[in-house]
Length: 197
Image (cartoon, rainbow, N blue to C red; front, top):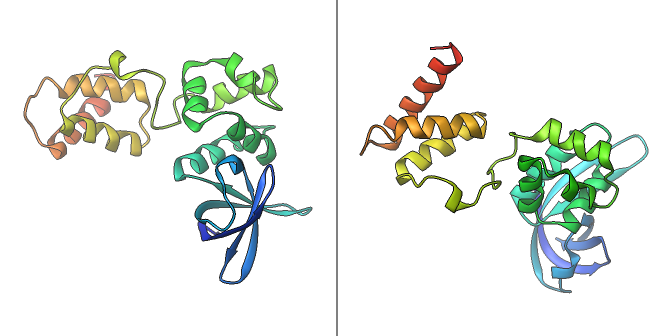
């Protein structure tokens, strides 16, 4: 798989650009051509989509945006073109927030997304998109950096945000520990919770 392409913008349209990399022109579907300028150096994260009918390269301005795109196209009935149209309409953070809060109205406002698809997106992806931006910083307790780092590790291990938040509350009962110690405490707490303890 082509993870990313760096090169010079040779030309672009409303939803695509051509990147000159080593004398080869790579045509990439791209959601943010309003930010692109001719002859500028760019780094585009890419996803190669292959079907019997076509071979297409989709480009993204960040790894987070590409990860969200991959999550979106995992939803039944949501193809890559529709996912790209969503990313052109709204930022990754806005889409993640809509999914995490179950805000179907925001998702329905995007091109090609009806009520059924919007509901399916929430059903399939809620709790799976990190970092979770559904709450503002004012809504969340403030923890020491060691606890925050342990929480990031728990999310990377696949734990959902409600479980991570509960683990953070548990960790905070033990002040001034290392990140490693907090992670062990969090894992112990979650394992005990899973076993019904």
